[in-house]
Length: 443
Image (tube, rainbow, N blue to C red):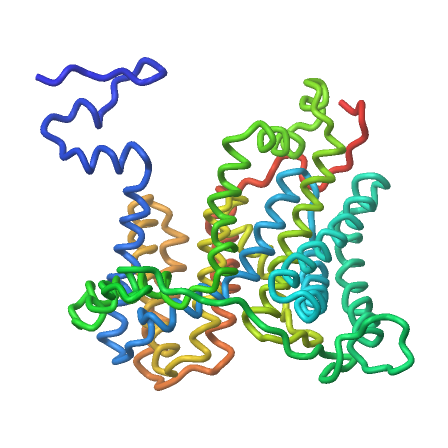
């Protein structure tokens, strides 16, 4: 008989005491990875059923998920920026303005120093916006919302002025200009960085394309899973790889380092952190400046990788969408990444087969059914009734329509965020002192 294994609090571990339990299941459950595999499997099943029923092949194709991965980066960077700022106790509504600064500085830097110089300039440009927000809110006690709104208003004016000075050709100018092709509302074209396919998984470097072969089999569930995974490793820009590496890096920094502990303590209980010798003001500055740097990186990515040009108004509210992903992700890096990918996926469907967007109605109906079953199990009858009505509505719309309006897929994630805030808002927890002013010595 297997002897009970004690945990840190002295309680027996039910996983360890279960006899003849497969090792792989014990490892997955102990590391918390089983739920992620279960979630991925559920997504594959739902997308597979939707593809078969709607007759589309775009919901789980390589092209869709490869594009979604890139489209999600500016949103993800803005969300990470908001997370760092709020973990330090400062609300950053100015992410949209910092994203805009990143687009202009990214185009300017990329024209003179190439794409890597452009992304560095974009990061610095966004960080300057974060510095302005930090000075206003941390040092002078300006209301966080007012300061953020002011930055959102200032940023388009600043970039328009700079574009007029540096992108509009002037033979009498005494400083270097970007050259022909620019105007007060746009820059000359800029060059992106190279892309790669990962070896063996997507056929990079002349190796076999294993996931591609599985996707082409058209086996139900297997083909869709391979298509999604292959989209994550095909035609990957080096900037895309760098951007998505920020998710595990941020998780490690915030929860595995002394720096991360101090940063989070400034947002949770700054007086206690101050009493333990943490320089609260310094860490608030670091958090907000890092927030602007992340947003600036996202703006530079938008210009260098997604469009190849700076254009006035091209951010399209992605900074505000980043705030939504931060809420969806419950102020955690992994959640921010998943939320950004959701927005990127629905944004990508505008460029794909129209039947794929129509298939979203059936997908939503199935998701609503699963959510209803969960709340019935929890005996939350009111929520279950609401999700039942939603599920019936989505299924009816799928049966009695042939297409959806183009604005439906982009609006869908906002609708999802709204429902999340209504039904699960009590489980979302922001840092305790976010938005509150702090002065050294306050208790």
